[in-house]
Each structure stands twice: as structure tokens, then as C-alpha cells.
Amino acid sequence: MTNPSVKYSESEFKGLYIVEYFNLLDDRGKFVKPWVRSDIQDIFGNNFETYFSSSKKGVLRGLHYQIGNKAQKKYVTCLKGKIEDIALDLRENSSTYGQVFRKTLNEMDGRGLIIPEGFAHGIFAHEESIIVNFCDKVYSPGDEAGISPTSLASLKDLNIKILSDKDQSLPDFKDQKA
Image 1 (cartoon, rainbow, N blue to C red):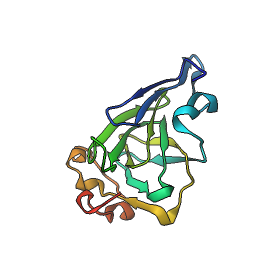
Image 2: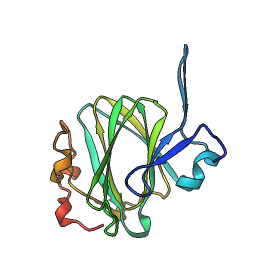
Image 3: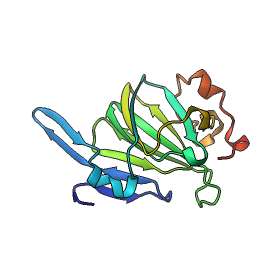
């Protein structure tokens, strides 16, 4: 990495990194710099698609993933509010297969997550929130799959108020293969 202010720490899930990036708070407000190609490309690769989403308090988006050669690596950070980032390991040969990684990200706190291919991913909004999601491949609607978040005991503590019709109809984890 060319910028020593960007730090990566690998979680207990191989390939899933917690990123700490440039974060400045002063009398004017906050300034963060989550993406500088030379700082993140070695771990993440190229960014081919960036999107933002806003969620009301109690919304759970996901758990979604792309299959086959369309599988995406994602880099997520929170711009407004407070979210819980959720990643379910679907890599059958992984020591953490079937386990859920959860990490709270707060408004422009200088932290993000890199989630590798082979994970179903979701966002839970603890309060009204906006996130930015960088992807190493372009979204392919025909190659999307998902897991019902309500099928996972480890997510039962979330106070889900809104789950889209699409996400409500996702198959249970026990019925799905990556």
C-alpha cells in the first residue's frame, strides 16, 4: 500500500477485510477518503461499479450474491446513519462455511469492509442510512441469487421492520448452494 494511513485487518473469515481509511473531523465537519486506487487496488482489485443506497430504520437489504464468473467482491462503507453489514460465507471449502460475519459501520467513521466472492451480503439499517458499495464486477441480473435472512438463527435479534417482497421470497440457507 502506498498510503500508510490505510490499514487492513483480515477478519476470521479468509479474504474478508476490515478497512480503516482517511478520516478527518474538524470544525467544518467530516471528510473521508474511502477510495484511492493506489491505496486499495492491491487488496480489492479494480472498481467497475459503484452504487449508493438509502434505507429507512429497520430495513434489511439482502442477502444477495452473484453466481459463477459474475461473483462480485464488494467494498462497503456507511456515509450516513448506522448500519450492520452482514456477510454469509457460502464457500463450501471454507472453514467458516455457513457462518455469518456482522460488523457495525457508522456514518463516515473511516471504516469499511471488503467482502470477497462467495459471500451472500446484506445491510441492516439501525437508523436511516446511506451506504456506498464498490464492486469489482458489473451487476448481472441473470446471475443473482440470494438467501432468506429470516432463515438464519444468527440474525433473529435484528428488529427487521421492512424486507422487500423479493427478499422475503428468497430460499432458506439450507435449500441453497452457491
